[in-house]
Image (cartoon, rainbow over the protein chains, first blue to last red):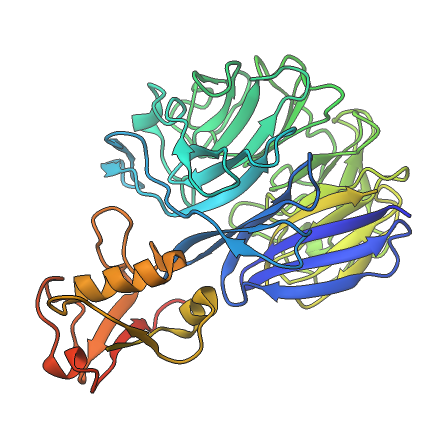
Length: 371
Length: 98
């Protein structure tokens, strides 16, 4: 019988949550790497038992872990992330030049077809790749070397490359997003990049429709329709129908268009999910009600999904990498909160139940659908 | 034989219990001890000092013989008590963070 494995990164370790296809009973293993921040754990689409995890701490820096048995056992692999050449500078919070300094890996994106190839999005914003299962890492320097790079500034959470999307239809096409530089696309496997931010408007920067400088929180794509992208920006939910060449707002009737994650239903490319958050200064749901919003029209028209979610006194946040979907017939949707809950819906968001309630603050959730 | 005490999270990472005992050829300095430590446990490379340049990570401290050696040059000889194995060399996660 098919099943689902959730890979959960938290502020104090990683957890693996496993269920059969009914998604009613869950086994919980962990904490793995107890005491360390685990920003992201993700499995290879080509080999679901090959997992990569980003483990870090303020004391001891970055460690990358690899599992070849679906998260039962782990081995540390390479942790040397050296920027290519002389790193140069970006802007610091006060506008002064600041040397590029590696801080941590925010996001790991395994190749679609090679378990040994994996991309890493890091802070300070850069893109790295390993082709030997994580043993060694090389920067793809063209992104950080884009002519706009010296003008990039960190967002409140640091200058992180947090989103990497590989286009399944066009080999070599990939998307990346950086807070607070914006979205970028490469059509040649990372050798060159172009900003794809036309149509974004951000009131918090000097030129609201600048080519770069936007605080993009998350991008999402449905693999069957890779030219359509969805974006949760700092404020505004956006959509592009031409692989990022231009964007238009689809916030519609959302109670607030601030938020972090955005994701797409596994079988309905026009069904998307966001979690509205009150504001950039109030990182909790409006009115203390935890609501996922679903649009079945690719944006603009949204419905609140509340069944099983707390509708009073709820002041958690849902971070950008903390929502995911499975690919079972009835699409499962999952998200984790800064309060340590991981919620699951086995009916595309109609109803929810917590799998766990008391983990450390959840940084990321990834679903694997197992045969 | 040099005795090294690692902080708990690095003992877990290196999969060791208790003190680590290292043979260090030649002069016993912070650099040669850390070189030997990383040679024995490659997973610790980058977790105590930077890969590039070997600078001590900001929230790691080095103590021995009730002294803070964190700011001493890496090639300064360690106290004889450490070199002889009478006293351990302590790698400490500073009391910072949460």
